[in-house]
Amino acid sequence: MNILVLLRMVPDVVEELEIAPDGRTLDTEYLRMIVNESDDHALEQALILKERKGGKVTVLALDAPDVDDVLFSAVAKGADRVMKIEGGDGGVTTRAAAGMFAEIIRNEKDLQPFDIVLTGVQAIDDLDALVAPILSHRLGLPYLAIVTKVTPDATGKSVTAIREFAGGVRGEFDVPLPAVLGIQAAEKPPRYVPVAKVRAAMKTSKIESIGVPTMADGGQPLLDVSHMRKPVVSGHAQMLDGEPEDVSKKLAGIFTERGLL
Image 1 (cartoon, rainbow, N blue to C red):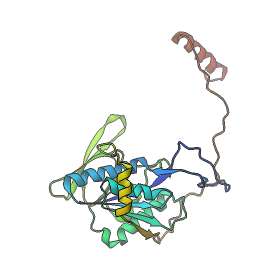
Image 2 (image 1 turned 120 degrees about the horizontal axis):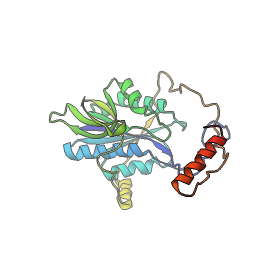
Image 3 (image 1 turned 180 degrees about the vertical axis):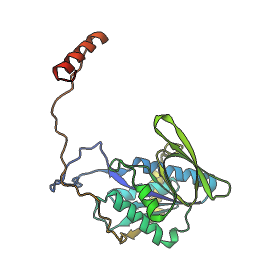
Image 4 (image 1 turned 30 degrees about the vertical axis):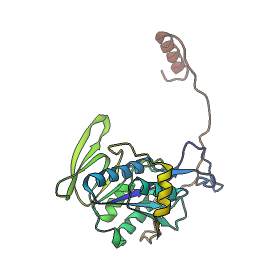
């Protein structure tokens, strides 16, 4: 199988996020970036498919701080080829990112033919899970998201994908190839790779660079951000102690006092 994996770097929310002086974007000067968690699962699922069916895994990522380390780690894990889209101005929107990926996949002839494109179902800065559906629309391919397992059929012309729904319900879908899948979780946790193996990959592997493609719509966002603000601390939680009956009476009193009962 020829598998393409798309990676994005996202802010590490463990660190304090600061708003840039323009009031509309995050301050990236001291911002720590990490690989998007569900994209990491997409890579793991691709490696699992390669181990089971053979083939080639190509990783395509948007340029961002520390992305080189992530790409060399992908090689150390088992990826065959890593590519980086350079020349962007940072802060790429979901729509623009999906457009860039689509243009490169369509126009880079050595990426074709491919069987499947795997990407994370969503990111902390993309809670609407839009990369995969926009990508599938632009490429004219079948699409399925919130996927937790992918099994190719014997002919290699389709895969059986498990999709999760709310309430613990799962569905099984036969998806013709080529297709785009949004991975929520791989069948196994993303594998650990020793630092020594990553360093070895840095010496023996090369990250290919691709310029930002030209898009017909310019990749402009559909909505403009007018301003960003940090949450304002307006109060503190009140802990209610005592027996359940006493706590219930206290809650009822608070609700009554605030006009909620």
